[in-house]
Image (cartoon, rainbow over the protein chains, first blue to last red):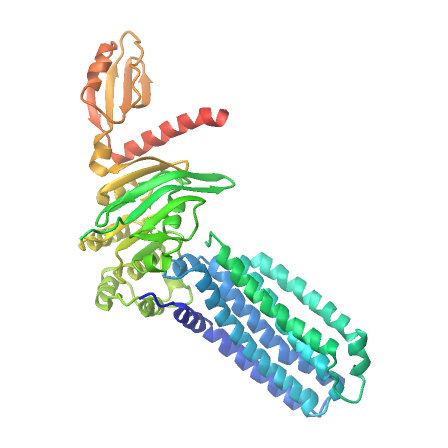
Length: 229
Length: 303
């Protein structure tokens, strides 16, 4: 009788989001098709820009739309009292929200990263020396998403989440530019092969570590909340 | 068999920037109906949200069906059905979606009863929530709460904004839910007719405080309106129970609480002639209570 209802909450959100997921999945497939069709027919620089835009945008947008619908709109549209009247605590509610959002985005981001890597390095569009930096870009994208997810969960506010998206978007560009010009990274970008030096490993590990820390901190903060509607 | 109390709140307080719930005591047995009455902003919803574990009190203790809230809220909420006026369902989904969801959580879900309620409420399970009227939406949330057969039903302004026909349907179903003698209901309303109709106990809340809480008959029976003639403009006897005085020339109307058969004699002794002694409806008691509380709040505010 005291079994957790987290699986039911996750299934409910998945059913609620199924049309959104299907729609963005279809858009992503079309975008992948366009990138594949353009390959070999347009200059590399154009394929790079178009490819990044077409691969990343649908997944990023889908991640944001889902976190908005599952976290922010739950409060904005007053469905939260209905959910919280069920046998669930704030901690379980938060876990359920993380369990629907994180795996969905992570899986899509991994697939997109793999496809991006295949086009960039598998087909030889880019030198292998840029692999560490490309990995940092995709990990940076994941970190940016995690920040927005955690803020949306903690505040459940449309205004604060939108502000966070804007700040994170600007900060990510600045952050990646800074990394690109860091000596230990920049020095090897134009080299003959990928160099995973301590700086590259530390930056990549820090990105994963900060994302993990944010998720744990969100759980702790949510668990400390006394009022939840 | 000894059943724990349906609800047992002791000295609960909650502070907001512009509102304070102060030292609220509220308790009633299982198998009874408690009506929370009070004007808008009195603190009824805050009390219900604390009872549901949705917000935490700053002090005091809350036990629901013997479970300590909010620590044991999972066990407690397995036995509570909650319907609030501001509660919404997922607009893009059907009633059936919500029924499936709630059924997947509660082993106690009664499919036959859910079907019966669908027919009684004239709801179509395949209809999307966004197409429902306010009354249909309230009935749908009521269905979701009732069909899980909870021991305690907590309703926050369930009949607000409903037309008389739908309001009757909702109240009738609340009454039907009481066929199980151990089932309890705690509900808030500023519609005194609803409270008078189904409550066993009444708690009057105003300004974040419980002003009175007792058995309905005792509650209503304790109030009287005395119509007096004051020929000599005599002062009223100093009774602590006088809750309201109205003057129209020589005719005075006095509302008293905790009425005692000795009261008319007190007025007569003070030089007033008692013309009639009348009982009050809950609506009139509500207004007298609010006016008295407001009048007494003025010196507090001024100080």
